Image (cartoon, rainbow, N blue to C red; front, side, top):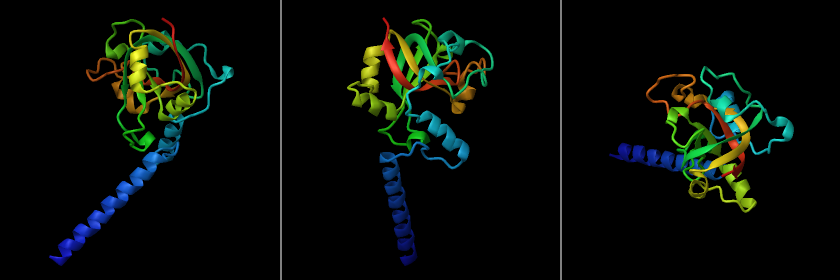
Length: 203
């Protein structure tokens, strides 16, 4: 009986400590997020970049058509470059909590799905993302980049997007370019503009 009480007490203390640690990380998440390998920390830092790309950073070859071009595109672009593209916004929605943002339910990326036409299957859509850090940056400029505001402002419009190129290895097998014909594909490519640094409604 006493042994069981001690076991539950220890378990309770562990749970409280884990929750406390998670709360601290969720509110003060480092750019490396929660990661246990150097590779994961590197990828998280790419997603969490806060530098604005300069003119020399942009790869002028990158267009929506070029990003959607069929074929294995794993090494087609560089994560050291930025891109400026235009497309039709199909949908805007919060991503699920992830290690990059310390699994905080309040600090989630926003997925913006774009295509070259109003009606396009998911396997022909590109994902561009607003990060919590750039959402904070936009708010400081008086710009509302919440999912709700972006959905209202962007869906159904032709828009221009700027930001850093990123290859999301976690979605390679769900992209049409790398896994053609996969029934679970919900995107054309694992390449993204992530993070977005500028959004402009064209029409």
